[in-house]
Length: 221
Image 1 (cartoon, rainbow, N blue to C red):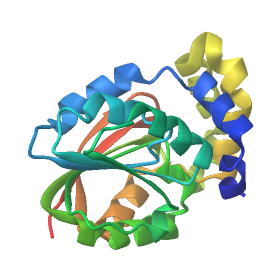
Image 2 (spheres, rainbow, N blue to C red):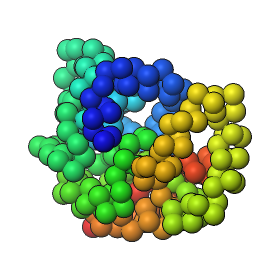
Image 3 (cartoon, helix red, strand yellow):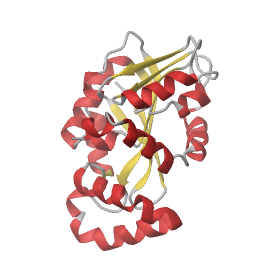
């Protein structure tokens, strides 16, 4: 189970080593979210706290949520004495907060939830976000087809992976294929259905490949 994988400190270190090339996306996220000192941010799947480290001086407060003790332990080292950062060990569907947020962020984390659980997640967190809130997601998004069409698009998908990851494809190949087959990246239409369950709507998107990119949500209800 994914939960058990993330309990492993060894796996967390391996993940951070292989997928540490995230700063460009984080800076891009700052521009998309337009963070300011009035904002209250929730980061779902905060990992070792790298994104929170970039934003904590830009916002009023921020909360990081992750299931991995090892990742949160690394994150906590970055925020000793920092009063406007809180870290919570929790799976996404059990999340509770005394804060009400107006900005949300999730990078490479929500694909661990199937479509039913994605819908439950957005319904669950809806009460923690004000109307008009923005929520930015970087994740497995099939821009050219839906998940049910994965098998017939497989060869093209793997070719896209080779082009997207370049020289890093071989070391990431096992994880990426596992994600496609055993986890739950999905098409835009299914993302739309899931976020609608919490009163959110996709207002912008950015395609980085046929299988990866970002969507910006706005809470309308």
